[in-house]
Length: 79
Figure 1 (cartoon, one colour):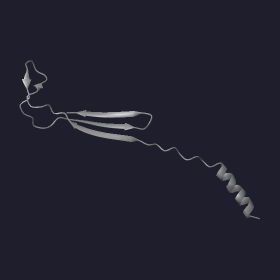
Figure 2 (cartoon, helix red, strand yellow):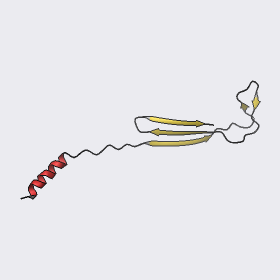
Figure 3 (cartoon, helix red, strand yellow):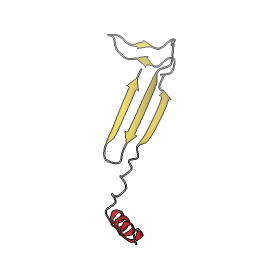
Figure 4 (tube, helix red, strand yellow):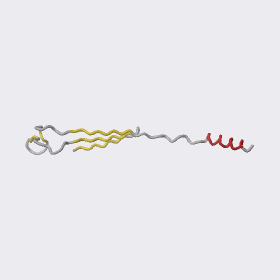
């Protein structure tokens, strides 16, 4: 007899249980590319024309993209 009210109470708890919390998923993408101009290409800037003869390191572009389905954020880094 004591078990019946307990079962009735538990059944009412299951009816009022909270729905599962929505899960969020974030998509991310990363990329890197070498954008070093070739030797002999025109060098920008200055008053006269000059051309690339040597490089001490490569020029890179890096991109990070984040998307949660509602908003998108992009971070770009250029050498």
